[in-house]
Length: 506
Image (tube, rainbow, N blue to C red; front, side, top):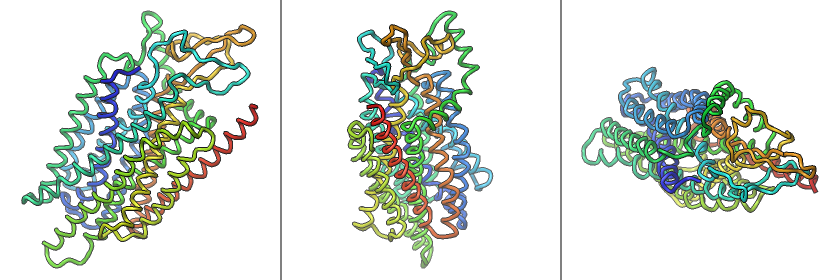
C-alpha cells in the first residue's frame, strides 16, 4: 500500500499538474501564434496542425512511456516527463515562426505531456494494491466460475479514481484561474502582450521543475516504484525475460481491450475524456477569440480591448466547466460501485456531452450569460464522468484476480508476475488453480489508455481545426457531440452484454 507521502505526491503533483500544463498550453497556443509570432490568418488551421503533430507523436510516446515504466519503475519516468515539460515551455515562446520552430517546440512538449498523462494511469493501481501478500487476504474462488475475483481492496479503485478526477479538475482550474489570467494582469500594468505571454510561460516552466523534484524525492525509496522485486539469479532471469518480452505486452493489451468489455470501455471512455478536455481547453478559446478579436475595431486600442476580453471570457467559460467537473468528481467516484452491469452514471455523462456540445455550438459567447453557464456545466459533468469512469474501469481491471486454467505457471510467468499477483488456490479436486492479475502489464495498459486519448485528440485537433476554418468555429463542437454519442452506444452495448453473461452463469 502506498504511504501518505507517495499518495500526496501522486495526487498533488502528478495528477494535479499533468492536466494543468496541458490545459495551459492548449488554451494559450492560439495567443502564441497571434501575439508572439504575429500571424493573423489561418490561426485555427495552425493550432489544429500543432495539436495534430502533438498527438501524432503522443500515439508512439504513450505506449513507450508505459513500457519504460514497466521496466524501470514510474519514479524516474515521471521525473523525466516533467523535466521535458519544463524545457519545452521555455522553448515554446522563443519561436519566431510556426513551421518549424513552434512545431518542434510543441513536439518536445508532447513527449513530456504524454509521459505525465501515462503516469497518472500507470501509478493508480500501485496506490491501492498490496505490496505484500498474506494468507489471510487471499480471496475465495469458485473453480466453476472463471470470471474475475475481486481483491479485498477493489472498492478503493473507484474512490481513488474519483479523487484523481477531483485533482485533475483542480489542475485544470489552476491553469485557467492562476496561469491563464497572468498575461492579462501583466498587460494591465503596461507589459506588452508578447512579453506578458512569454513571462507566463517561464512561470509555468518553473512550476514543472518543482513537480519533477517532488516526484524524485516523494517516490524515492518506495517498493511500489521498483520494476522488479526479485533477487539473485531469479532477478537476472526476470530482467532478461522482461527485456525480451516487453514489446509483446502491447499486442497482449490490445487483445484484452477487444475481448474484455470493461477494459475496452475504459479505453473508449479515455478517447472521449481526452477529446473533451482538449476541446474545452483548445477550441473554446479559439471560439471566443474568433467571435471577439475578429470583430470590426476602431483603432489599436479597440483591438487590444477585444482581445483582452477574449482572454477573460475564455477563462471564465472554461473555469465554469471545471468547477462543475470538480464538484461532480467525488459523485462519479462513488457511483461506479453501485452499478456494475448497466453504467448509469457514465450514460448520464455521455448524454450531457452529446447535448451540451450542440448547445454550445449555437451559443453567443461575446458575453457571459446564465444559459452559457448552464451549457458549460453540462460540458464539465460530461468531461469528469468520462475521466473518472475510464480510470476506474482500467485500474480495477489491472488488479482483478482472475482464475487461470493452467495447473502450474512456468518460470517465465513466475518471474513476470510479482508474488502478490499470482496466488495458488485449490479447486474441488485439490489441484492447483492459479489466480492472476494484470499488474505486470499496468504500465503498458496505461500507455494504451493514453494512446486512445491521443488518438481522439489527433482526430479532433486536425479535423476540428480544418472544420473550424472551413465550416465555422462551431464545427469542432458538433464533432465532440458525435464522440459522446458513440460512447453512449458502447456503454449500452456493454451493459446489455454484461447482463446477458450474468444470466448465463446462473
